[in-house]
Each structure stands twice: as C-alpha cells, then as structure tokens.
Image (cartoon, rainbow over all chains, first blue to last red; front, top):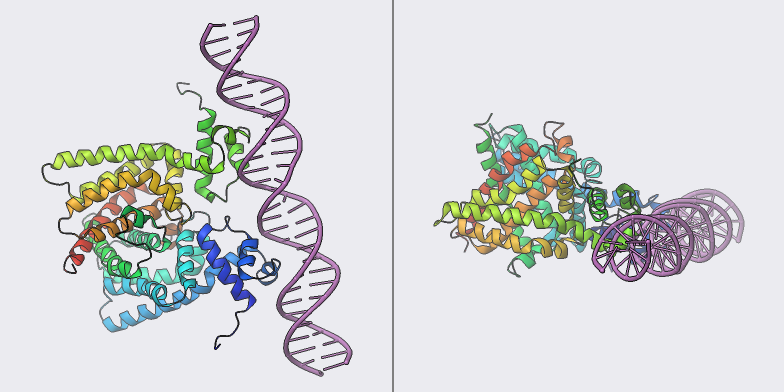
Length: 218
Length: 218
DNA sequence: AATAGACTTCAACGGTCGTTCAATAACTGG
DNA sequence: CCAGTTATTGAACGACCGTTGAAGTCTATT
C-alpha cells in the first residue's frame, strides 16, 4: 500500500460529502455520516465544531482545488491569445473543463462533490452565503474574461448569461437521472463525455446570441 | 369580501409551499407549516396522510395548472405556424412564458412554487420520481416540438439541449440572490422582466448552436 | 518511564421530529 | 331537531436529532 491511511478528518469529509450530496444538509444525520466513516459520533464536534462547520468544510476542501485549476487554465488561455482577449469558447472551456476532467479521471469523491455543489447552488438557504464565500473571487475573474471576449455586450447580459451558464452546468452535475427517463435511456445523466461535447457549444452560442440580441437594446 | 374562505387543505398547501421552498423537505417541520397555516398539527395527517403526500400534493397542485397552460400555448403556436413546424423560439416561448406570466401577474404562491420546483429539479432525492410523474408527459410534447423545429438535429442533442435549457431556467427561478451579489446589485434575481428578455434568446441560440455543432458529428 | 497533549470512546442530555388516537366540535341531509 | 358523517382538537407516543462532558487511550518529548 503506497497510500497513507486516511486521517479521521478526511474520513469524515469523505463520508459527509457523499451523504450530503444525496440527501442535503437537513436530510443527513451525523450518525449516518460517522457510521459510514467508521468513526465515533463525537469526533465531528471535536474536529469541526458542529454539523454546519463540517458542511462548510466539505464545500471548501475541493472548492479550493477547483478554483486553483480554473484560474490556472484561465491564465493559460489568456496568455495564449494575448494581446487579444481570449475567445468566449476558450474562457468557457477553462471554466468547464476542470470539472469534467475531475469527473472523468479523478475518484468518486469529485462525483459526490459536484452533485452537492449543484444542490447548494440552487438552494436559497445555502446558495447565497456559502457559494459566494468560496467561489465569488474566481467567478468574477471569469465574468470579466467573458466580457472581454464579447466586446460591446452589456454587462447585465453577461451576468445573466453567466447565470444561465451555471444553471445548465449545475443541472448536468446534479445527476438526477431524469434525463435518462425522459429520453427512455437514449441519454445518461452520468455521461461526462456527452456533457463535454455539448455544454460548451450550447452556452457559447447562447452567450453570443444574448450579446447580439442585447446590443440593439442599449 | 368577494373571496371565499380558504379551506384547511388550501391553507396547508399554501403554507407548505412557502416553507418547503425556503428550506426544502427535510428542513421544514410540520409544526412550522401548521403554525403558519394557523391549523392544528394533526390535520396534515387527516387531510393528506403524512408529510410526503403533502409535499407531493404541493407539487401537483400548480403543476397541473402549469402543464395545461403550457400545452395550450404550444398548441397555439403550432397552429399558427401550420403546416410548417413551429419555430424554436415559439416553442421555447410556450415553455417559458407561462412561468414568467404567472410570476409577474399572479400571487406570491407561484413565486414559492417555482422556487420549490427549482429545488426539486436539482435534487437527486426527489428530482427523478416526483418531477417525472408530474411533468414528463408535457415535457415530451415540448421536446418533440423542439425536434420538429430543428430539422436534422440529433435527438440526443435535443434531449441534452432541453437539459441545459431547464437548468438555466431552474437556477433563475431559484432566486438564491447570488447574482445580486456577483453583479454588486446590477442584476436582481427577482427581476422577471430581465429573465424574460434574456432567457429565450440565450437558449434559442444555444439550441441552434448545439444542433449545428452536432450535425457534422453524426 | 513519566508526563503533557492530542485524540478517541461512551453514555447521556434536552429538544424536536412525524405520527397516532380518543375526544370533541361542526356540519349536513333527513 | 336529530342522527350520522366529516372535521378539528389536544395530548401523548417512541424515535431520532445535534451536542456535551467525563473518562479513557494513544503519541511524542523529555
């Protein structure tokens, strides 16, 4: 075994990530989490200080990794295009591809994490504070890059475009299985390659369409 | 008072709709709901048979109204375009406009309902069964109409396009307030007119882009 | 080996949950 | 007005919740 033993904290984070992703914050009990982690109930409070801090820690752990990778790719596509601004497609790729790469090649933890992220992003209860705290700085960078890639587009249109973009991404990550039923099995919610092939073109075309439709208005 | 007194069932549905929309199924207690409704706790079980049946009834009540209005408009745009298929924009309008009209001109109940719908749609726990039961028949009609409006598009692309479309809609309905923060107040999550002006153009362009990008693949 | 500190265990606390049931009240058709 | 149904009340049930504190174990340093 080359792998070091997982610490108690990591066991708890992994188990919490998995359970929170499936049933949300209120639908998951600490006894479920500690049971799955094989760890005593009281250790949640010892290591994290409570249920809510544990939830926040789950979101933060991979969120930091995701932010770093996204910014790395954004810098890359910007440098490749300099001195012109990066294209809309390239910016979108830097935003989506880290997620899709982690989903395709990393462990099942990322699967749960993105499912949880989809849940949080649509939650009025958590979406505002928690998402903003972890992701706002990075997202603002990307929105800025999108504005540069769409000269003449109204800022409001780009903000709303980002909202639609992340909504489309979010529902794809939630893996509710509904698309499977709707398409009678033709499409599968878990098909990362299918998302990769389609989500980018969809939102790039959407953003351009929105920018063009919006310009004459202003 | 021209309005008839609300029945106990309606009071419970209204209160449950409001509370479930804000904190989800597990985050809302029956005592909260009955307290807000001003009725006795035991009446939930008397009238609905339990918490889960109440939740399903909340989803079903306005879902039936929404389905009816959507299908009415779909029939209308199809007849107006006959014998040619309805345009992608017209089909999308028949799908979105009932929601936006209810939001803009009907009572606050619809507001809570759509927020709840956004929550359910992204939930792995409820999204599959409950959404499918109430909405699949109608949604299949719309997907069929979208396919007719995009001749040559691969069915898989249209199914995925619908997934992105409904994801973008869903996040807009969730009203998490995150867009307000991201845009420093420039955009407001609750601005129905802003959604109406942008969501249609965005997804129409996205669907066309997806269909065009997909065709050479097949 | 002794000691200090970090970690883990166990049992229990008060509180809230969804649900149930017998009783009472309100309504309705005769 | 009465009988029979429907609706409402109030209290209570057992189960599970998040959190706590005291006691025990492990680890590293002296």
